[in-house]
Length: 329
Image 1 (spheres, rainbow, N blue to C red):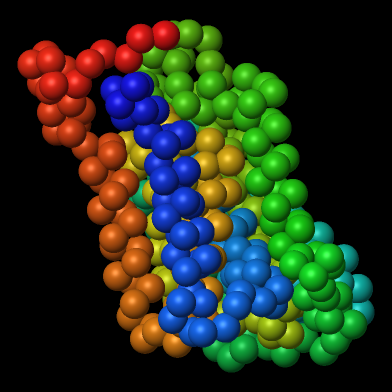
Image 2: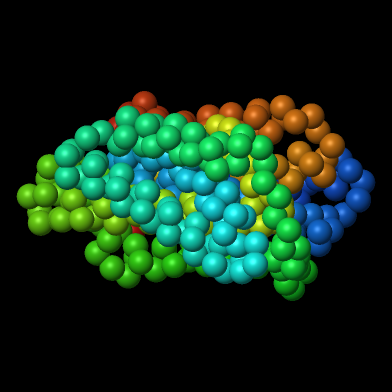
């Protein structure tokens, strides 16, 4: 049984991480002396909405063995475009932001797929260019969003726990899960990430899939930036690297491998929820801000242990010596 569990880290890692974080969240009353309130769960889901689409965007590219550094630039540009184009019509602002994200992702995908250029330098260059563009659009300053009806709408409570922003984010994960499970896209992405040459031999249309993947990544990042800008009633020309780091942590907690070929949208969902719940644990427990970094490090250490080839070999040796009995069905 242990061997079977370790053989599927993309399934066990998100479950272990999420279980540990839920236990920590449920235990916060022991420190605070007050029960968990509905607002605590709502606030955690708001944190999930803030980072979820970014984690989904970068996580999907990681499954295919790529790494889209430009998501943070697209995230910032999406917010800036939404604020400037959506003062009178919030929907128009969101559509304009997503359209920019689609165009950026498609161009990157074409360069990476057709010219077979590594994704890191392409997306890094795009990230730098997009930050320059957002600075030019805003004059280096945050831009206020004056349509307060839209700001109130995206964060209004639904059922006590959700908001339109968190529900849109959750819907994006579920849609991605349906596409990757119900179509050939899921196996093809993992095949591309596992062995690109073999996937071409097997008939996978690698170039077309990569273009579509980066297009989706750009759209998700821009949508996330637009919703965040509406929520904050302002757009920041430079969100910094922290959103990217948190998104990568969420992807790793969700069972995605840096080497590619492994991961699922539902695992990414679990990873994003882990990050959001951890942030809420720190907030309601009045812990120092640096504590969350230690939590991230501890969870990543558990993941590294589960995914370690050395641990797999140790389990095999224990089975060979009869210490662990093989699992029988």
